[in-house]
Image 1 (tube, one colour):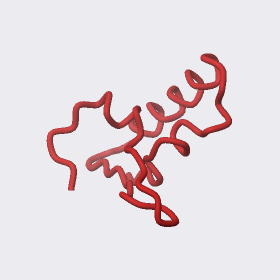
Image 2: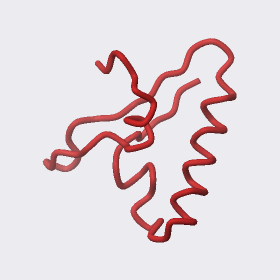
Image 3: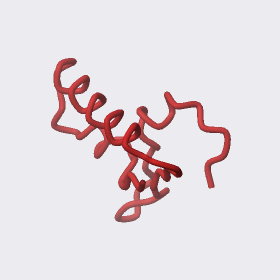
Image 4: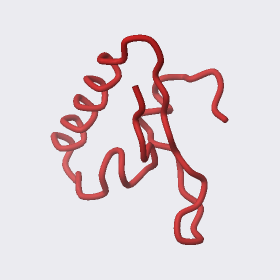
Amino acid sequence: MFIIDCIKGFCPHKNAKTLEAVEEEKSLFYVAMTHAKENLYFYAYKQSTGRTVQISPFVKEQRIQKIV
């Protein structure tokens, strides 16, 4: 399973302004994670259009041991 664009602003989306909207996106993120049969890969990037971006808070909550 691949979950792409795991950066702040996409996951959760920047338009998710209310707590309810963020929680709904988090729920969808967790559903995607639980559908992984064997391997789960998160994809994020360090820069977008010349700006440094941050990893998604949803990914940070997972306490992943290795981020490459």
